[in-house]
Length: 373
Image 1 (spheres, rainbow, N blue to C red):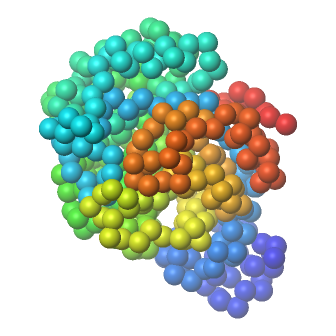
Image 2 (image 1 turned 90 degrees about the vertical axis):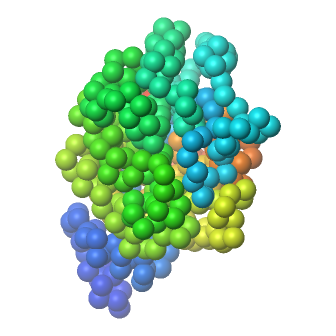
């Protein structure tokens, strides 16, 4: 069914009104978004989201050549949903990399056409302004062409607090040391009543948003995430996206919104059933419909698997992250579909082409490196 037919023929007056807004290019409200979560079917949502996606990007689907460095999984915080972190005393499953080990990983990619290194990990007491700045400078000296996207707002809040620095000053110093942009991790769900149950001791919603705003004011870009499918409700998802959309109205500093599916293996919330693929696709679609000022919606394929990632391209998604090169354990340890997440450029291109889309290799800031096919 075409978008025009959806807008004019649906029997649900609320859905008809929302479809007409989308077709006219009018922003939907928080109430509209909640109505979509509560009443809209997956086919209807896919049609609306795909219309927006093609209006913004045509058939283009973006990816980049990247790899991850996770300096440590030892963490001072205790998040109920986390399968990755270990306590500081865990010597069997915990790790901590020194600078030499980190640079060894960087050197493995010498001569390879990767454009980005993504650095995130646990919050360790050795994480401070001096050690992080030293790492950034060393990477930039070795690979000045490599874009460093690093450190969640949770890690940065801890670093700045220890150094007694304002968020603005802290971001300025790390940017000067070589940090180019921020990932979107640590956002989880902003609603305080949820955070108090799933991650009570780490950076709160206001601190997360303030750090990203400080990065944007420094001229840096960042991503944003939302962890969905656990104890949050639909209204709390909308509240989360509403706060992000409001910040983007002010700063225009976000590149991408990334819904992250809760995976239950190996954590304190393993009693919860994971949401279905249908709910994944509904959530991607509503994200695309609501987050009108975010240029891109990303499906993180190592978390949801290649098949669902390919399906998401018909539900508003226009970015699949990157090649990864089996360099992250954050989601594989939680039971994600991809236990050894790595795709060659050719495999990513083939996945995108099979979905009827055009593969565009990009850098972190969405400058086109190459159009494939």
